[in-house]
Length: 222
Image 1 (cartoon, rainbow, N blue to C red):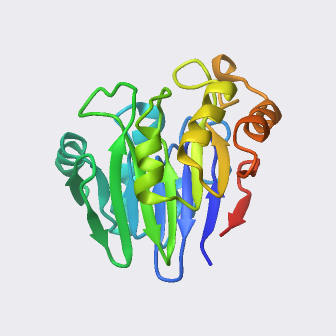
Image 2: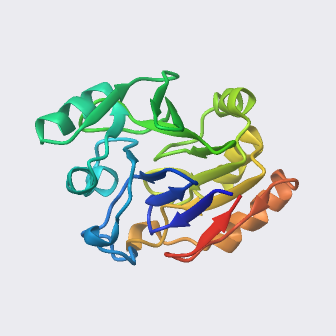
């Protein structure tokens, strides 16, 4: 069983039997985050989808406290190393193994102050999870779905710097995960959205996909 916990914005914790992976650990300055950096113990790897403050966040401090590597696009990984953290660099469709966790970074349509934006595929304890990162809608999401066949997808619905609920539902219809969790909304006024609207669009465009709406700190098991 794999436990997936939403910690606000695009920040997730994925716990397997022998591994605990963080994605985009935005803690300080995140009004939705229910935990502090010191609460994040037992972390074995950290994935950063792109170099914006609300995604790179507190990754270096957490990595140092847990002696955990940061997995990111090459230039971001190099930057994290210069800040004193362990890092593992890769690029689109490359492969990184940390313990029993396999990570592939995949394309995302967005921007990044360093390197390129990415989504992340995480394979852990027989489950496959796709964190789309910050992204607009793009047709190669179908390819990501066909190659990796994710059990769970996290998709942004904020609508200012990435997809709105309707476009995010189209993305879900391309990827065809078993379960989808909306993310990257209601953190700040410009990205206020109703996740129930997203759910309605998914029910129309991808009726076989289960929508799970979490509150920060809540989890789903797959």
